[in-house]
Image 1 (tube, helix red, strand yellow):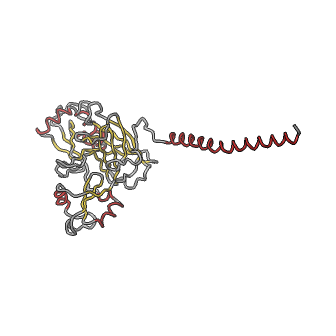
Image 2: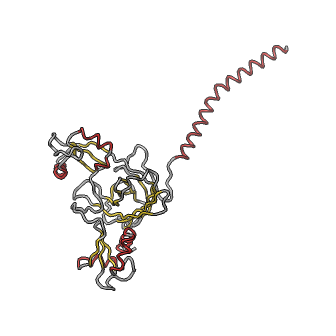
Image 3: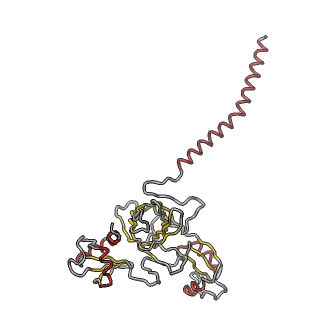
Length: 330
């Protein structure tokens, strides 16, 4: 074979090999990039830590616009409003659980500030037969805190599960976005319209502009005079959410948001027997005379004497949580 023929054969072979490589290379690169992207996405996905933190999955909003944390068989939805923090309870299947009888506290630490701010969580009941879920709440102004700038630690006691009477979890603060949905009126809304009386946006009498419009903020219904008011509700739903703080009782009556001190009476005998000892001194209740009753947001604890009141005033959340533990025998 001549040298010229040999060169032509080599040239043809090289061209053929290059063509094969040109066809194969894009597919290999695409497959490699796919694997790399998938690995990165897996690494960057949400993880559940020792604090049992868990965010709501994308596209699966929570009932009240809050963030979910999981502890054992219970799920906790925390809703951060400008003037209030709420905690809703669910079982492992996301079915609502009543928070009746439960208590606790929140401990908040703002970035750049070593001080820990503690607030008691108390039960907020809803009306008999209401479809609105009850919850625990703490009255606290967080309107000036930026998202991500505060760590919030929750300690809950007397939970409605024998296998999990207490739970602790931590979240990073972020104001909640309350879901707003239009809903159809039914016969049961007559009582709600009568109680609300006026449109929260315009202030006019409900019914004065025709049939009121029903809007759900989470599961909380409010009534508007017309659909023209819906836009303002959607822009700032938290501003129109009916105020229901831990001071609210099941029949709507309000109690003082401050500590009140009084002498216990015969009506308190059962509660005193459950608590047994003073939450401050640890001594037996009644050993120093008639126990002193301290009440906050509708909840009461008992002290051996008035000399212990000062310490409760400095850390009410801590001592009310301790009283709740004593009542349940822990």
